[in-house]
Amino acid sequence: MDKSGVCVDNGTIDITDLVNAMGDSFDRYALNIAFTNLAASPYFFWVSLPVFSSLTKALLDIAIGKLSKSGIMQTFFLNTAIKKPSQAKDYVQIVQKRKAAKSKDELERLEKDEMQYFSNLVRITN
Image (cartoon, rainbow, N blue to C red; front, side, top):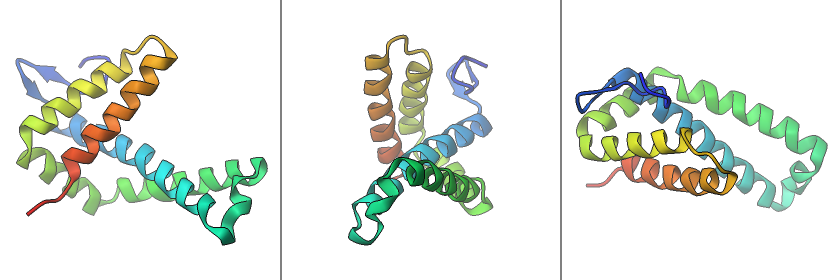
């Protein structure tokens, strides 16, 4: 197992670790989107205040964490990884780079890249 938590051996990827990594990316991505949209709502402007911000993020993190660990989402991540192996491999590479990032700027850039690769991986198209 490498530093990213995704086992890569002879060009193959441990599917369980890949599904878990996808769940972690989903957690971060969904939390960011949910909180941003909630704070932008005229009725929930108060969630961006410091005290409420921490509480709101914690509650959203719990809810989104439970969602990403549900059987339906795990099945979706598994199905996606199986149907899109080349994109899954690209996603694993960017996750490995993000985990090995040394500077804050590099980490921020790689987190954005990871979200883009994750978005491309899980996007449903006809």
